[in-house]
Length: 150
Image (tube, rainbow, N blue to C red; front, side, top):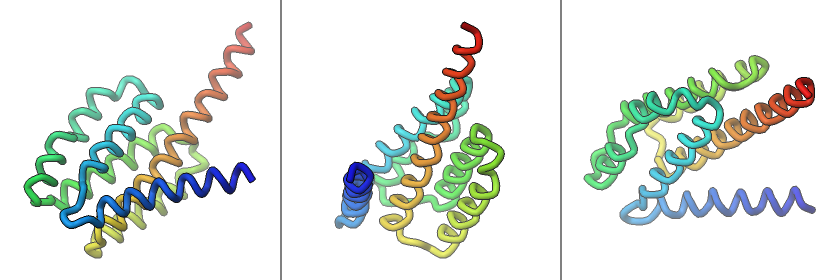
């Protein structure tokens, strides 16, 4: 029952994101929030990339694009692939094939002029699931190390 409730809450959250992006005009501020959360999760995976993330995920620039209604699809594609590459650098090697399938799916959708209201919830949901798994794995490894050292 706990799993079902958790799944329903997650689905409701992503449905609300889709709703915000479906408004006329779309509420793209939800993307800024998702990008901020993504950056925080990536920093939790590797604290040394904070400056690099600031240089490659420019939330202020993205907000300006959204506010002006001028979306640079190439920038969004590059940013999405950059995030995927950072996930790849921090995840278990055993997940590499699955990540490349995700990258291929993302690029295919972006190349086919997918609606952002459909793309972003799918993209960020998977990004968050992957990053949360990495953070969880890192916490387990750190606990094991601490137990060995003590």
